[in-house]
Image (cartoon, rainbow, N blue to C red):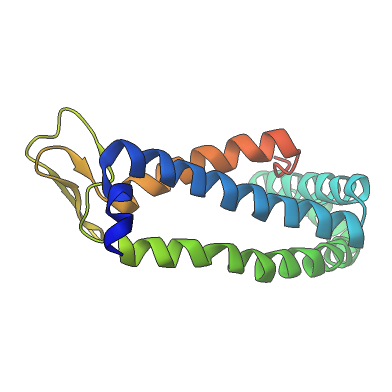
Length: 170
């Protein structure tokens, strides 16, 4: 471990964690894309998502408007929507299980970078303590692993979902 000491230097570890987040996201989203393409086909998956989303929006609007007639009509269609949800569930579960293995680097990093600032955030020289997370920003503005990795991971994940076309339909 002594020969890996160079990786704990802030500019190196900061970029290293960004690369790890990128690789983990690309692997996870690629698994998602391949599994869904294999089981349903990408276009069919999007059609199902759109149909389920439209049904849920219509049901929510009918519930808010207290439109009993429309709710009864939607109740008849509910079994069809449940069947579509069941079709989508298998690839999603397989993707979730396979993507779990992409978390292994996270657990390895968590143990190696514990209590080591991995990036610096100017303006927080006194540090910052968050509920449930404890000390998120060390005195001097040093960000610990969780405080740095989460935003980077969300950013990279959103970016790669757009690039690979795996962004959920809204």
